Length: 161
Image 1 (cartoon, rainbow, N blue to C red):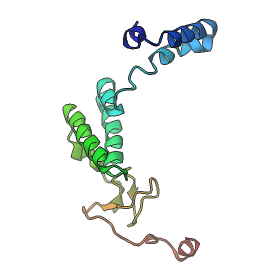
Image 2 (cartoon, helix red, strand yellow):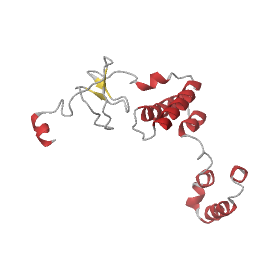
Image 3 (cartoon, rainbow, N blue to C red):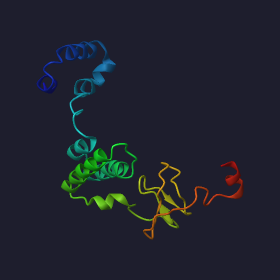
Image 4 (cartoon, one colour):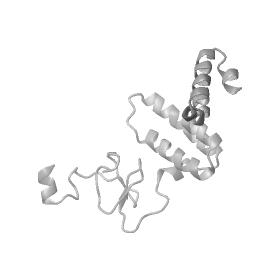
């Protein structure tokens, strides 16, 4: 039993989960969840995803995590930089170039800018993403958009802001 091998000191938790599973059909359905809950807790989600997800799913998940780290506002820059380096290593091991995850797969018709954090695309220039709030939109021409917060708003919208 994996749980016993990895968590030998958790006998009472294993006993409790076993009794619950024995007495409740609903708990029996989720038995593997109860027993394996902490099995991968010591690993970063990108490392686990690299081991268990199909290539396309890993690419999508790793891209989200990589962009969140790269364009996030972490209080500890040392942690952010080291985590970014480790993510890049995991992504490269799967045969993916990290830079490919930092831009949209394709430009949607009429889009002039996109958010580098969530990859939302916009038809008008903006200074901040309405999906994730990131301030640092990038144009498809490669330039960072530094506009006023109300750019692209109508007069009525400006008066409400």
